[in-house]
Amino acid sequence: MSIRYIAFSGGVGGAKLALGLARVVPHDELLIVCNTGDDFEHLGLRICPDLDTVTYTLAGRADRVQGWGIEGETWNCLDSLAELGGPGWFRLGDRDLATHLYRSQRLREGSRLGDVTAELCRALGLASRIVPVSDDPMATMVATLEGELPFQDYFVRRHCAPVVTGFRFVGAQDARIHPELAAALASPELRAVIFCPSNPFVSIGPMLAIAGMKEALKATGKPVIAVSPIIGGQAVKGPAAKMMAELGMPTTALALAHHYCGVVDALVVDEVDREHLGPIRDLGMACTTAPTLMNNDADKVQLASTLLEYADALVR
Amino acid sequence: MSIRYIAFSGGVGGAKLALGLARVVPHDELLIVCNTGDDFEHLGLRICPDLDTVTYTLAGRADRVQGWGIEGETWNCLDSLAELGGPGWFRLGDRDLATHLYRSQRLREGSRLGDVTAELCRALGLASRIVPVSDDPMATMVATLEGELPFQDYFVRRHCAPVVTGFRFVGAQDARIHPELAAALASPELRAVIFCPSNPFVSIGPMLAIAGMKEALKATGKPVIAVSPIIGGQAVKGPAAKMMAELGMPTTALALAHHYCGVVDALVVDEVDREHLGPIRDLGMACTTAPTLMNNDADKVQLASTLLEYADALVR
Image (cartoon, rainbow over all chains, first blue to last red):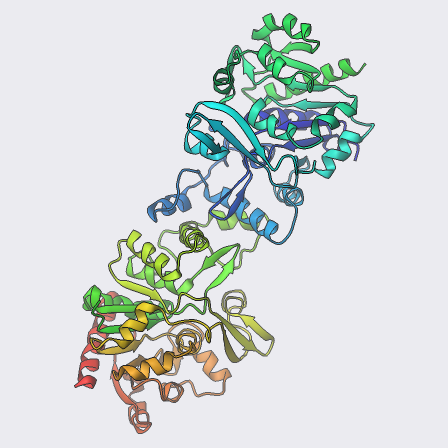
């Protein structure tokens, strides 16, 4: 193990940058860490949306149009389940189901989530090292004006409609940092930690809520660099901007910098957010601009390369 | 409830006659009882092959070529599971999976198997009353020269290859007869109990092994009529004849009559087995011949009608 870069990722947006990084960093030098706060039990299956999105994306299996799920997916099981009166709100594709059945079975047999993830990666022909932030279960709860909702209830069933007032990460204080991540954070080989452009509250947030995580990041002595998921006041995908507004924050890269203060050393904002460069630097946070919108694989590789150069510049 | 006929069924062969009976007996006068000895847990799912085969057949959903599973089924989940290194020996179709997911979830929620079966029947638009022989779990174990095997291991994974030396029905002595079946057996309205042409050892056998079942059948005072699954020395489908041979029995309707002695009052044998009529009657068992090979729905309805006439004649 000689991990030089650690990338923290949520789902779709994070997976894009993770793919770019996987193309420019040798496999044994990159550790991709996925949020597990979205994980939940559904129909007796253990479903890990962020791990699966990242895995499918890096394996070239992801549906490029919707960004999640598997390309060429079929929905015969879910259609039949709906006919039987079973729950249809969480979209389980036939091929995707195999992942959940396999993982659930291996977990019942006593395997750790990280080891099962490694098995799935191998089966998909992936050389990239992808780990859950922890082998221990965590669950993001979303506090809303309609009461507290489990994350998938809020995100999928309610389409992020309820107004958010806060978050709670059940289990995070008892969850142990995945051993491979702990080792990488403690390694002298480490050059930078990257927060992919994922939701700061429900993708990066649960990972930072793990006991000792912020301290471990600080203790690396290496730059923690976040890529802003907010571009021109909007989230590329997902509820990040809506959440910021509901929490009374401006929906700006500057507000994101405030949010990440004390954890993140440098923020990469999109070129359209150039106006925030100065104010962010005034917070004592390094900042640079880059084209952060990733519409195709070339964009992903370009952003990853830019990030690595920026990280190296910060280290020097 | 005014059940007049109870039909005990295993899978494919039994389902054919159950379909015929369902076409000629009013829904509220027929109770179809399914073997649960084949049931097993696989990938965390509770799978009930006989219940599902009967349900799918009566709902017109069964694959008519292979006899089991769902017509127009797809196999994307199973194919993906195999790619992941998961078990592929038990053929789980995408649509069929919905049944197992639904049932497993309802059982986890505390529902009884019979109630879940009723829900599935309603969802499939079935008015027929189909119940598991018991809500309590049972498991058929097949003793073979290669050791004891769980039924599905013997039947599906090993294709019935191991030489059979006996059977054990785990849980049968503690299983309670399904309440609807117990009520029907005790009802003065009952006219006859029919054993469909199912495997006597592993389809009818587990049901007869339930504590009090043979006594309850005897106590009805009504004829118990079995339709022979052995025609001209061969089983129409499945391992019945192979098992008989391995257990040292002649593969004849007469040997079947010996096997059922003391439980069955009358045996319906195929017309090609006319030679066994006399010897079977010599055992003190009523016997008649009928065309028992069911190649199409008309055959099924015809055999069902013949059976009802025969039952009425026996009662008079």
